[in-house]
Length: 153
Image 1 (cartoon, rainbow, N blue to C red):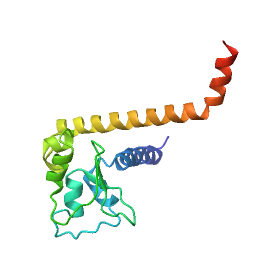
Image 2 (image 1 turned 180 degrees about the horizontal axis):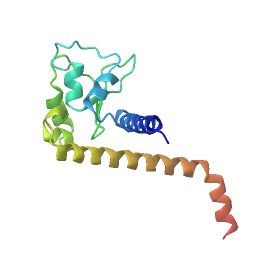
Image 3 (image 1 turned 120 degrees about the horizontal axis):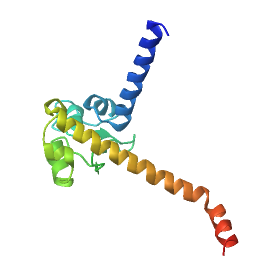
């Protein structure tokens, strides 16, 4: 393997890791990029940058464009008003959230705090995936399970 191949493989691996972070909305930059049709300007208290800093990514639609969800606790909030403070609203509606309990932006987290949040997010993602797989597996194999059960009675 030549040096170019190694560099290409490493670059692809790094891009894959970053894509995982993007899918989890782990990085503030990715949360900012998720906001497609946010109704409030950057000068408002609940601007895109302030929403992302407080842990929210956009989960709205064209019709309901003021919906956002926390990347850690998955709390979804809508009905935002321009003067709402995302940190205060997050704490009010999800005081158990590990991210909001820290009360600081991503840039101010220690490495240990970031890794703890990463662990919480990854664990939650794995649990959701397992539940979805189990539900899908049961639904897709319901008839086969019934047949098996009746044959073995």
